[in-house]
Length: 144
Image (cartoon, rainbow, N blue to C red; front, side):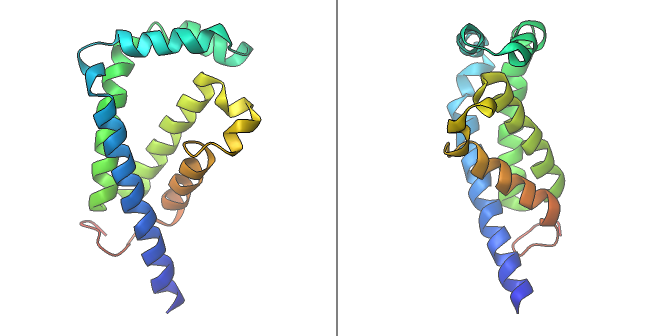
């Protein structure tokens, strides 16, 4: 009985995060045609960046903004769809964890106290990690 409740709880997290990532992708649709939106955001983060995020922004993120703008939008949509439908949940959650961690690292949020109280931070990362660990064979999954 307890296993069924745990699986039901993880299913709620899976579907909820899936909807969250679908709407995150929708909010970034303009990035598909204008990578400058992301580039400007990265430049803003660069202004106050700590050494490690600064290096990452200067050498990886900003030079690749034209590609990342498209990849992030498509990846968030694919992640959201995979989670809502329950397809490759563990793999999708792990990749989503890396993607979200990347954003928090690049923005410098990962190194601030506010990260622990930010709804986009610790709760999303912890939930994705829970799904990456125990997200197989959940109810309402197309592919168990």
